[in-house]
Image 1 (cartoon, one colour):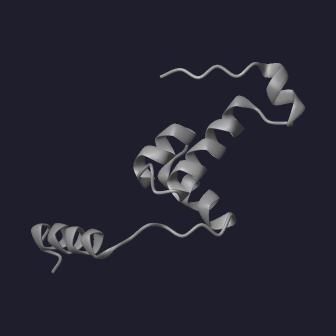
Image 2 (image 1 turned 90 degrees about the horizontal axis):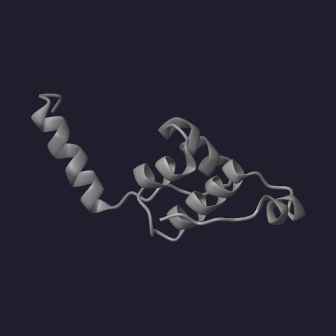
Length: 81
C-alpha cells in the first residue's frame, strides 16, 4: 500500500517522511496493530533503534504469557535450558 502525503503538508507540521513513518509505526505498535518486528520495518529502523524509540516515549514492549512460552521453547531447542 502506498500512502502519499504531499511534502507541503509535512512542512506544516515540521515532519519528514521518515519521521512520519516512525510516528505511524509507533502508533500502530502501541495499539497492538503491528508486532514489534513489523513496526520496526515500517519505521525503517533496526530492532534496537526502534526499541530505543519506544523507551524514549515510555511505551512498553508487548510481552505476554504466549511470548514467554515461545521464548522458553526456543531456548530449549537451542539447548540453553
